[in-house]
Length: 131
Image (cartoon, rainbow, N blue to C red):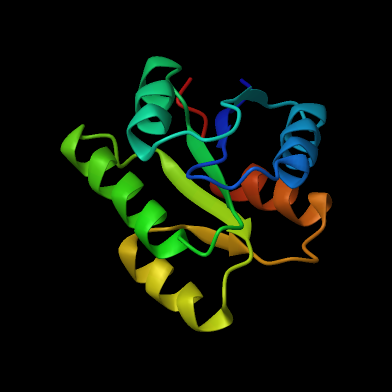
């Protein structure tokens, strides 16, 4: 059963090439991918993930607002009793913030230079299909 993954670009960041590359790689690896497009709020992303019965949410954050955006997304998943949805992400995220994100509940953070193979292999290994 394919995994359902929402790939999202939260906030005001307008650069989505990386998110599209990751979305395509995940799709090519046999997953069902829902790409939300640019400028999504955490509320919109969580709503999409719940409506689509997603197994995971992958956030691409280049804006520097990663702590705020990831934390808000996780709060909303808590509120909706949907913490079974695995949250991972990547972008320009300082090494010092990665343990803080992990403590908050982010399953994995990919930094610049991560390959699509690393990402698809991690998803295959660490995200269970709800089906």
